Amino acid sequence: MYLGIDMNQLLERENGDAAPGAAIRLMATVIRLHRFAADVTGVGLALPSGPRFRYQPGQYVSVLLGDGERRSFSMASAYKPGASIELHVRHRAGGRFSETALRDLKVGHSLELEGPFGQVQWRQGLGPAILMGTGTGVAPLKALLEHGLIGGGQREMWLYWGGRALPDLYLRDHFYTLAQKHPRMHFIPVLSRPDAGWAGRRGYVQDVVAEDFADLHNAHIYACGSGIMIDAARARLATLAGFDEDRFFCDSFEPAFPMARKAASPTLSLFVTADRVTKPVRVAAGVTLLSALKNSGLTVLSVCGGKASCGTCKVNVVEGWRHRLPGPERTERRLLANLDHIGPGDRLACQIHLTQDSDGLAINVGSATWPLGLRHSFDQLENVDD
Image (cartoon, rainbow, N blue to C red; front, side, top):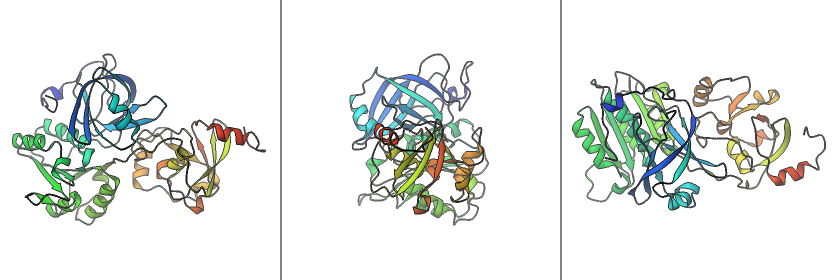
């Protein structure tokens, strides 16, 4: 069954698997395409034999497109040796993958994947596990939930899934069934704009969680979905007794921005060094450094699309600028601490927000592809380290 899980088999491990969390590239074959909702398609992928793709529940994989762009999707099922993986793809108008590529995708076609990535992983504990999501943010929560159920024990697990109307909760029957089989698992659907006949919870998931839990001591919270929901959830739950940022794990689902999109009204100059070549780049204020670089046409790696969960957009801020930027906040500090080869001035480009005070910022990036227009203009510049 597409959504079925075998709790005993999920505990198995096979020799020859890649280490959990080790990112690899591989070709996967499409074996299922299922329309969950009008705007959500499930994609089942068979993985090749050989070094096996192993992941932790809550992690995601990138689908590599032909021109170097990538789109990231969470695995929607717990790891099972030799099994296929499941991705939930929300259709977005103009989306490079969700509209163009997915429209032409057929069973038997191949997709190049890279992963796994992400820091949202299951943590053991005695307190309740509170999983809250919106839209396709339920995909990693489904994998976390399945993983948490295989261990037995008495830990209570609460899944809060929010949408505007009932059709948005496209897996509700699956979770109702799962809750019937496992008394310690609770499913609470939440609708913000329900029909008049809706008898369930109304409003937003973070507010419903706050109504149900006055005390969050020992609770692990997993939040996946829109960035707006995650920010609101963090702010709302932080007002409750026992909330601990170190037990709040989140994954923001944001639309990918296209490469080589020109920035509107550029007002700042950045000096970017890549492969020992330094060039000025004009960008707009009010965006992140990662967005500014991509909007300028620079090919800068970002697997997670700016969610501060992969570390691939790491840059080095030159010494004279390090004290002039606001220091990293907890999410960035936590991820940097888990990366290898971190040195002074290393930051995540997705977490640096450009303001007028950023004019003249100088950074080093590991590598970049300079757009043709920039290359031509640099040929006429003097005193450029080229």
